Length: 275
Image (cartoon, rainbow, N blue to C red):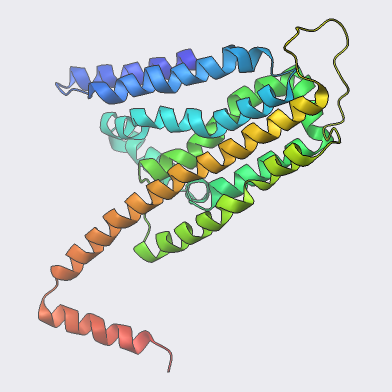
């Protein structure tokens, strides 16, 4: 996955170079070092190695793959690169995909916190234990979770979907409410003294630093609570930035109207109001 993504990105940069255009260095460094680099660290580092044995490593790994890794990958602006490189029918296909209802749904600022709440709630059930101990499930998580995260993050950061300032205001208010709700799974894990995933203690000799099952669950709750709260903050910031840009754009469009067009727009608005 890392090699494939890196090769595709490099091919895009190479295609631009052949056309006499240059891709900025900072997005490329962000994509390779921060984006793919963070994916490698989370997947093959401590969290990946101990994800089967430690609850807190498992939950933290999923949370980072869902939010942090996609956010860092998006710094490379892969959608912008693809749009710049592609042309003709291929560009039309890309725009059609980006404008489809699943992408619009995933790119909704309200969807990301709701999905996180649903995903993190799984950690409160025995299903979490089954997923943690299954190697096929761990492999599927490594592939599927970052893709889902990218579908949520890229439309917001790269503004592939059109929104009005009113719609973004509603998104902003709902996400602010969900900032509190998303913390519930982490709080439940932290305060509960019953092993919620149903997996017993690991048998055999363990390193001296290995936590007990209860402490492991409490650490999982602490980290999940922290990540769930922190992950909503960039969404709020991005929504605010997008709202300010769209608001300025709408204001310029109104300023460009003539007096006659403004008067007609006002009359149309008054006619549309219920009496």
